[in-house]
Amino acid sequence: EQTICPGARLLQGWQGVTDAIFQVKVRGMQFVLLQDTMHDLRALEDLSLLRMARTYCKDHVLRDKKTGELIWDRPCKNCRGVLRLRFAAPNRYKERHAQLERLSADALAQRAQLCG
Image (cartoon, rainbow, N blue to C red; front, side, top):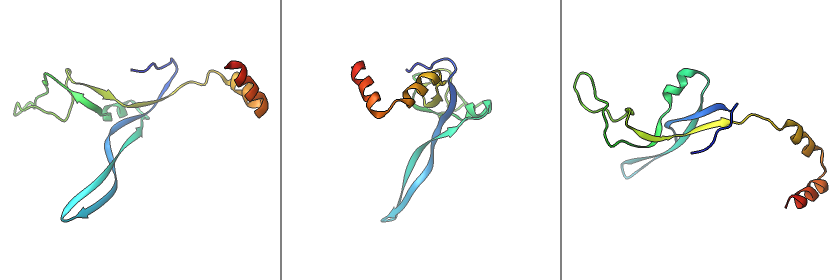
């Protein structure tokens, strides 16, 4: 788990393996190199598109209403997994950043030595 500071904005989330990078056919077998992609989240409805990675469920209860069969491609209330999200932290140190930007390379190296 990681800490998210107050004021952080949710930028992107993982929606599954979606991009085929490379395809090749060898001796009649098709091989595809897939890439994990992070997609922008712009609206509240985009949250429903997120997928969990490395899921585990010891007591899966999500069933089809008509047939009663287990539905494994969607999480139930007992499922556990990892959501991969990307946040942008708020810029709280503008003045300090501006002060460090004004320093020359020698002055910055001297401050680094003082700080240890």
